[in-house]
Structure formats: structure tokens, C-alpha cells
Length: 108
Image (cartoon, rainbow, N blue to C red; front, side):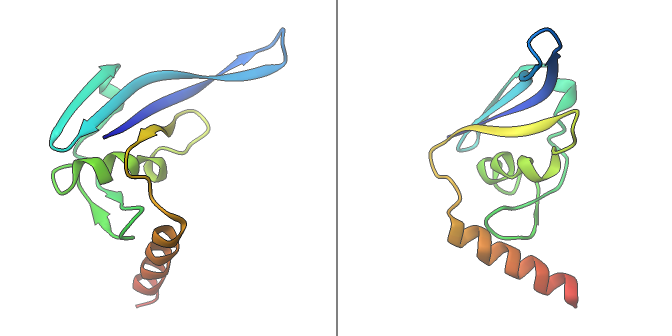
């Protein structure tokens, strides 16, 4: 099971701090998924680069892997994806191997 939130920064001027406000949350458990919040911010048809494989995947290919990989697709200053729960997090070794595969594919 993976839960990802798309968050936006809220500047607390009086306190001089920034807090991250969740706008939409996606929970994926196997093939089942649930969207809470502003679903218009989340595009389930968006191809993303898999954190584990370093190749493009779609939601229909592997919903949980797609959800955890949203951190690469939503990373602007206005909207970021944050994995708030993951039963099978990506390991450092998997990240390194995916980066190596992606770098090798880009060189071809």
C-alpha cells in the first residue's frame, strides 16, 4: 500500500515559516485506489519514470509503483508529491540501479 499527497506551500508570514498543505491524496493498495481531495490535480494517465526501474510507466502498468514515482513528476515549488506511507519503499540500491539504467538509456 502506498499513500501519496500532492502538497503546496503555505507561507506563514507572521511565524516566518512554511507549512505544506495537502491538496489531494492518492492511496493505492494493489489494483485498488482511492483519491481524496481535489482530484483534478492528479492525472492518472500521466506517464512517470519508475523509481525502481528507471523507465517510463503508467498507472495501469503498476499502480503502486506509479504512485510512489510521482515524486519525480510533481516537484515544482508550487506542487510537490510526497510519499506519506509505503509498505514497500524503494531501497537505495534500487534507486542507484534505476539511475544507472536511465543514464545508460539517455546516452544511446
